[in-house]
Length: 525
Image 1 (cartoon, helix red, strand yellow):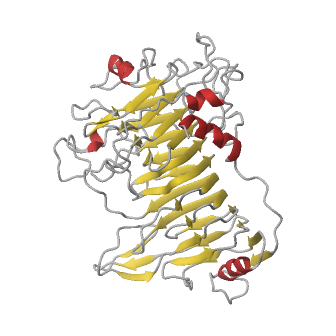
Image 2 (cartoon, one colour; image 1 turned 180 degrees about the vertical axis):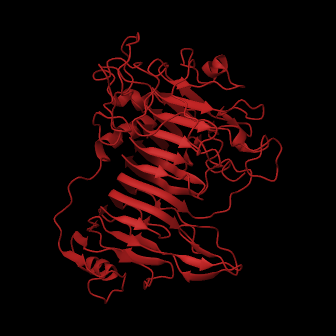
Image 3 (cartoon, one colour; image 1 turned 30 degrees about the vertical axis):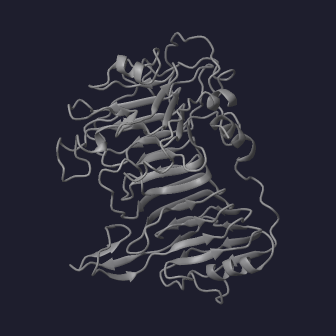
């Protein structure tokens, strides 16, 4: 199946579930402790009852639940969900809370609020647990209105199962001496829907692989599966995990969402791999070794009406071989924030890429289509902005992205030197921020309510708001990137209409560079 047909197909079959089957039974959670299968009113009891009761059951949380004295079904897992008819967990704003802790050999007490890697000799006082393993071919498991706080991972999703997590918060996750695991693990034919979900403070403490060019340890991972993430935030600035989202084959849609800190990766294994980032903000943090969008081994990343911001001021000094981030010998010097290699492709459409504080001779090529002699491709339409840096001026960028009309001039956003988290300056992007009214991003996309409507790849609907809730168009015009300016400004001259984001054009436009050097030969260099 081609990438174009795969992307169009998702518009027809992979929308978020909005209607849940009539429940066979409702089980109320009234106990504030996790319990076991025999403790009536506990969460453990409710899941067991749902597993043995035919039909799509509902679990209603009527209280917060602590896992601190849990009776897990395995040493590290709280529950299995097995009924093929599915399950709905209605959180009603309540929390599932763990407080893992241990004492170091030097006597320090480590908790989820001051996490660090567990080492031999440390004394576990309260363990961390993963929530659930989901069996294969469950019709749908829905989690709505739940806060998950202080567990190891959340869900390991069996093949052919659909999971929808809505209006929820997942935070302070970490192994704390247990098995390191992502929040979500999705396998073949799995569909994972995330809508209005906040994920932050993810600490799994994996050791990085020195010299690796791949995002090995993500917060969310899938293989030959489908991800639909909409209206959500993945904030990994205060997290020890290495990657944001890694998708190996299949389809990952990130729509109207914000990703801070760590990177995104798309690759091919046995099936086509496509990442569509639409109307979203991606701000990789400079201290991350995976601060990039990465397409490799044939994977394709389509970045559509989105904003990428990267501040390089925290890069290590040249030749510092003791550090993973040392330049120029480590990959951190090249391909941050865009890296395509080994047949991978990154396509920009109506998107803005800002790479600031890169006036260092050792910062090499933040837009890279090569690594270790393997070749990828970077491409852009004429309505995308890419900021030049010292070693990649406008002429080089136009050639690199195969776009002679690439937007490269001007400053796209206001500078704010007051925020200490991105020193010394960064391009401002808090809620309600907007591009410079006279900058290169404003009012560039014509007929934005007509021919050039912005389409949601999950369900085919028209996107009407920017990532911060502002109207997505102004007087029929759309700004480049994910943020619509919210103050009136002088209208600038705009080019004629162009068929940018119809279903066929948005994804069929993708260039496919098929230099397959073996599906696995480059994965473990």
